[in-house]
Structures are given as C-alpha cells and as structure tokens.
Image 1 (tube, one colour):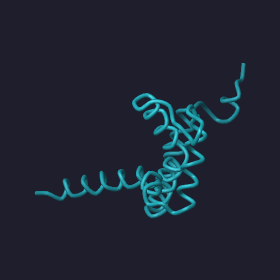
Image 2 (cartoon, one colour; image 1 turned 135 degrees about the vertical axis):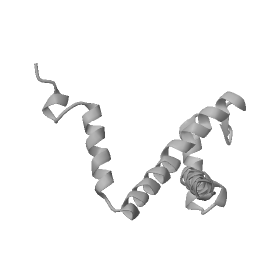
Image 3 (cartoon, rainbow, N blue to C red; image 1 turned 90 degrees about the vertical axis):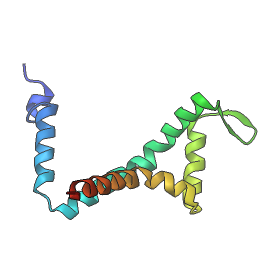
Length: 115
C-alpha cells in the first residue's frame, strides 16, 4: 500500500534532510535572512499566544475594557494595534526571539574566540 508520504518522496525525516541540504547550499547571508524572518514571524504570530497562556495562568484572565474574561484574540488585537502605533514595547516582543538568538550567537562566537 502506497501512502501519501511515500508518493511525495519519503517521510518527514527524508523531507527534513532535503530541507537541511537545500539550506546548506544557500549563501550564508541568505540563510541568516531566512532565520531572522522565521524568528520575526514567530515573534509576530506565536508570542502573543505564549504571553496570553503564561499570563492567564499566573495573573488571571485578560481583561479588555468592560469584558473581564476576554480571550487570546483580544490580546492579539491589542498587540497588533500596539505594533501599528509603533510602540517600542510591542516591537521588542515581536523582535525578541530574533534578538535573543542573535545575542546567544554573539556570546558563543566570543566564547570560541577566547584562547
């Protein structure tokens, strides 16, 4: 029996190996830009939900105006509104994952440069 993954050229591990190989063939600048774009997308899309989950567990429900039990989409709407207004706090959350990875990589490069 042929499954859809077999018809597409292998399972998830083979596809991941092909993706890793295709990224390895790209110039370093292009790989860095792809990584920065993925981390920025993570900050723009996933971080509001991570913040909502953590704060909902620790601080209690998110309130939005008169709505005392606003859900995660109310936080996401406020998040994108803050981004649209150019608030530095919201942009630091959006760019936070990329900045953290950059700082870790800089630290490791400095660590390797030590004698």
